[in-house]
Amino acid sequence: MPADVTLNQSAKVARLRPTSPVRLARRVLWLAMRVAMPVVSVMLLWYLAIWLSGLPAFVIPLPERVLEVLWEERAFIFGHLLSTLQVAAIGFLWANVAGIGLAVLFDLLPPTRHMLMPAAITLRNVPYIALISVLMLAFGDSILSKTTIVALAGFFPVLINTMHGLRAADEVQLDRMRILNASWWQTFSQVRLPYALPSIVAAQEITGSGSIIVAIAAEWMISSTGLGYVINHAMQNYRGDKVYAVALLATALSFLIYSFVHALGKRLDWRAAGEQRRG
Amino acid sequence: MAAPISIRNVSRRFGDNWALRPVDLEIAAGEFIALVGPSGCGKTTLLRIVADLQDPTSGEVRIGEDSAAEARRKRLLGLVSQRPAVLPWKRAIDDVRFTQKIAGRVGFDPAKVLAEFGLAGHENKRARELSGGMLQRVNIASAMAHDPSVLLMDEPFAALDEMKREEIGEWFDRELSVRPKTVLFVTHHIDEAVMLADRLLVFSPAPGRVIEVVSVSVPVPRPRNHAFRQDPRFVAIAAHVRGLLMHQATA
Image (tube, rainbow over all chains, first blue to last red; front, side):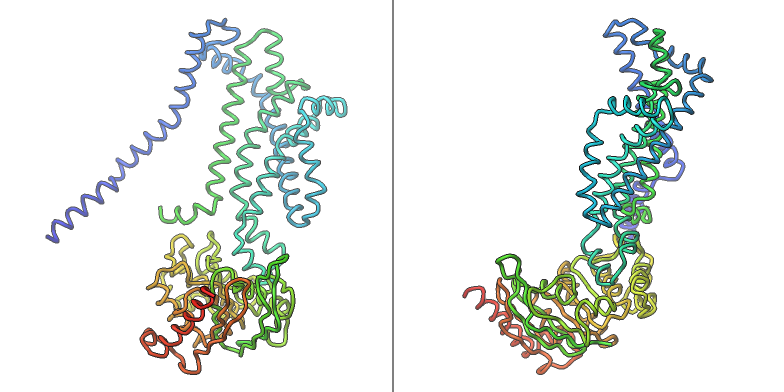
């Protein structure tokens, strides 16, 4: 009887824990599927749209033509890509400085929230097109005007998520800090900020990938550099394939940024700490 | 070093509603006081006023020579809540050290005390890796880490099952004999209160007022163990308190 039990338990363990080559093969297969499936599904939809719509190649070019353009004009596109990345990165940085900075200020001095929040909401609701036009008039086609637009578009989600995160700290933990007569900074850095981190990272997922899109939109309207300019230029020359090439690149870039921030967020998320240790 | 507590005419009102009718009580240094009563009777409110986490509408609390605010500023108080305040991203030993770091005072060696608390081998585990009983022990170790004079406990064992509750209660009683503290202990559990306390403050239903102070220490000295639960004195005191609460509930 004990032998049977041991045998059954061993079989159960073997089922739950496959040998390492099998696990590795499964993992590789799973990763390959994760990469391949989105590409395959997008391609299928793309071909289906061409086939069903009957639109000319200018409006919906074949995927292989788009990839061809991307390769042929890589030097030209890469130069403009760097310009877009610069605008997006600086704007993203300012969005975070403003968003996190304001949220911390509201936590430190609650009355400032009532003073500044209406202005933040107003800025958020002004149409970006109007803002871009005003900034164009004020600063011309400069990096300042473009990064300002990216920062304005990005700071609000960062502000709201950081505020929400700072308020998410467990009351029991806050009582503990009060009873220990902790300073504002100790409570902020040791309790409020760690509790806010998952919310702040979630905001980065939105703002990080969104910065590329907003930078392209700003360049499309007012710039003579960047991927937005390339799209504008291509449209004027009836180069739909080039528009698609840039769109594809921008989408891939946004996706990469999102994935990077998401992976970084998982590493920083204290809620997963215990599980990671067990795993 | 345990400190005496003086509660003088302390009350609390929220708008037109009394949460706590005036309470007067002198607590000796090292005394264990249990606050017993139905939900909403003001037990936690009184505890939070002593902790300086809430202001009283009237009266004052003195802890030794200090007001409650001064005692909190001097880090003379330790707080144990029903939900453990162990930081989820910290390992057990680091959480105990964290209290000492914030309080700027090392009460004892964390590793040694965690071992005494039956947590040897679990020092490096995080909150979610510990059982409810273990987590509450870490919580108590963290609350005591800076060697406070007064320990304020708000239903600390409520989330534990009956067996675990009894086990941890007896363990806590032994701990207090090693590290004496003045304790204010909120509970709904009459047996637990009689088992642990020197005196019980029995509260009426809301608006809460103290209907009787029941002494346990006079008939029953410490240390107490599970055998005390079968002692006729334990049964009599528990029945008396239960009777008081039942009478109030039906009055």
